[in-house]
Image 1 (cartoon, helix red, strand yellow):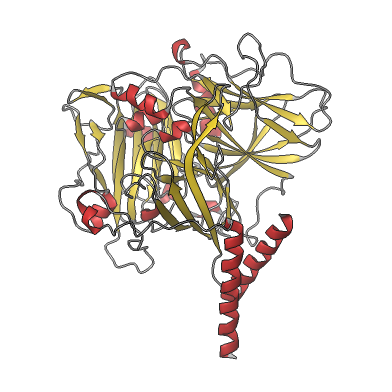
Image 2: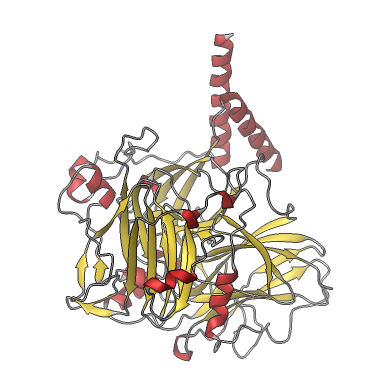
Length: 589
């Protein structure tokens, strides 16, 4: 396998040198149900390519990715690429406003470029609470060799998915939400779909498989941690080990040591962890719930094991202490302490800080206020500025492309309006190359995470209470971190700034699955008034639905997978490409 991989990388390098183009990587992925035991009880989960969690998509800046996805579920599916900006190509974003779902038994091919990005991200199924059953996997975007990295090369690279977990199926959870019930306390917290380790026999029953991370003493590892859960913020920590924060969601950060980190739903962090302990025993890795009361807290935290090769025994004793739950400022101050490394280059050689966002004039301001669950036309829903989003049968992107009237309106209010809440497909009318300020005002009793597809935004401020114009005086206008998901604490606000330089239809949503499912999302339409030849046009393999269903060719997109592995197919394609390129060169000599 290593020999084949080496041959592939050599061929990939040759094709890049010969053709001068950015490399392509090809994958065949099947989305299907698998049997797993996340909390010791066998249940149905969603796997990718027969794996739960799914395979890691490991690429380099500017590579082109082609993924043929076959849906073997019993319901439609879409995969979205959390934090991947899909530059000028919202057709590949994989959410209900951009794509028709892939029906059961069908397949569809995603094709996109990881343009001008580095860092740690993840993918997941975006429809119908499916992420609550799995279907997620990591995305690692490596720097190009010509761009220096602001830390030494780690001895290993480890991805961990932490999440709250329910024994009830995602369909059962959907039914609960639709009937007006809350999801209640999760049944547990898992690492990579496993655990917890039996640190306390009174809390954790026998026979539960758990995650073990094997390491070598004295080595330094990069840990990429993703909260892929449903609605629970989690505090991540490793017994007796510091976490050196280096990157979050595509931005290099000022390097600081933390003993623990609050990671909210949908967020991703990257740490360097040095194995500098005496290995008298194994060490606990813990993910415990934050901002929950007793009735909504799982019985036990998530616990995995860090195992040194020279460990002298199993982990034992109490877990490392979490932050004081009564100190409501701890997590907010920790979030404020995360700063952008303005002197480091990232995807490009120029320093991150050369984009002086604090000096740009704001063109549009939106204060987006959420509310707890409320009755809207007789149904229990959640709202943003009094609107509970309802996904039309024709995706917004397609409706805009074909100028279909009546599917959506560009009239999302920039403030909460004192009127009865309603269902609507209202869209934010973004100004191309404008600079938008968005304030998220959280009037709920739980932490909400908000995510914007297509962009990295600057987190410039957060505080408890109600945002006012005077709050701008507290903004960080120099080194606020650029990311795609930010937390908003209960009865508090968070302000972001975003440069709308990426044309497309982009989803702005809460990452908390229950709130998202009940309507807390909106889309931002950003239209380039000029003809941009680089903007990706409607894909030839587009699936049509809604009022455009008549355009759908009869199963033209159904293509049987090759029996060859993805690696073998990549090698074959690269070899053919090299041959064609060499023939072209020889013909010109």
